[in-house]
Image 1: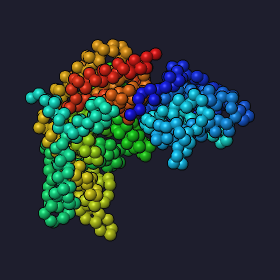
Image 2 (image 1 turned 90 degrees about the horizontal axis):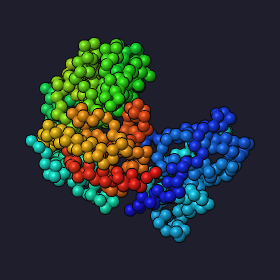
Image 3 (image 1 turned 30 degrees about the vertical axis):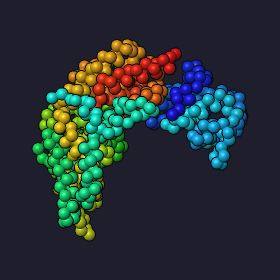
Image 4 (image 1 turned 135 degrees about the vertical axis):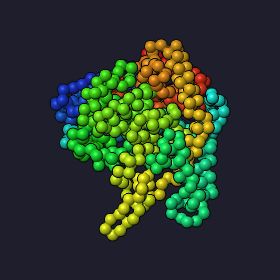
Length: 157
Length: 410
């Protein structure tokens, strides 16, 4: 049975207590997408400012639990200053981490059975890997990311 | 008669299990109740000894199955004080019961501009069907506002009733536990020529129910919140209203005759029960009613009032202003539903900590988003009490809340 500290790592609580890049941006020029978690009523708005292909600013508003809020906060620090392609790579790695089967997490050895490798290079975001042990919370962790993805899609619509 | 809660707990096999190494503390009966052994046995006995389709076969066990399922209809009628068992229509759940009224009665009787008056306490099940009729034919959905303590504000009732054809309200809020004055609302509806539908999902399992006392025209409720199985609900309606309503779903069972050029619908209630019904579930809800009647609904209500009072008092003493419990404080005007906000801790985080202690509560918007907006919250943690809960469950909840407060101390 995973304990609370598997889920609520210190860095997560830090981002929850002191969320980075909270606020709003003027739309347009910024892109905006809104995400909902119908299970718990959480709502998040993600604002994305692009300069050409570079993400110059991201802001988060809305309400949610510690997991959704800290995940969105960490996301902003991971993608600001990156190109859209780099951000999408991080998004893919993060979502891969969120979809890894639980048995892959209990050992630090690479999985032997062909299941996807635990992505690395996510920095602080790796603190969220414990969420996979609490399947109902995965939607919380990915809410901000999926909404960010929608906002990026706006740029090409 | 007082409730022997230790004995009651022992009637529910699930309550003997552990969760994460702790004895389970089940505080989510507002979502679904646990089932006593007698209900499980009755359903198993049907499958093991008389499984056959109903109203069809002329053989022995088919007759036994038909009798057993129709006995359940009589039990339900008795349980809610209905004099005519034909007024009891079996549905899938309370949601389907309300949808049945919206489709069958609503489409035959509501036109553009007609008003359906609902309250801000409603579950989505008693909102969305009326929104759908608003989109389909331009009826108007009007809302009864709330007072500061989460009860209905009826100061302006006369004005609210203008143009109303149906008053559709819950008898107990699934979020605040508030018990609105449904008799007053039913009488007021009738005074302006309107009908009254009551969503009894959180009422019928907890308070002695008599449709004549409620004064309503329709009553919807569900089996799984009253110690019965899922997949079975009830619409009770006054006979002359049901007789005048066209069928909703078409198929077997609901017809007297089918020809190449049309069909003749069956009598009520079977007119509204197309297809093979959930036979085991009918027998299950019948057994649930027998179980509740055996304990006595007045004893159950008395126990819940006393336990709710204990919870409000002890949790108030332990947490003071840190713990906000929505809804009225007067236990005579509320059910055992405690929607809680502990400081700024999100409901999801709170319920996660409670789960570690084997405590089951509901976190979220409780399918009542208009009410949540009115309360100014997106989610709450809801503990809901029932006949098998006791003071030790409330104490365990308080202990776990204390740990959550420590864990998220900031």
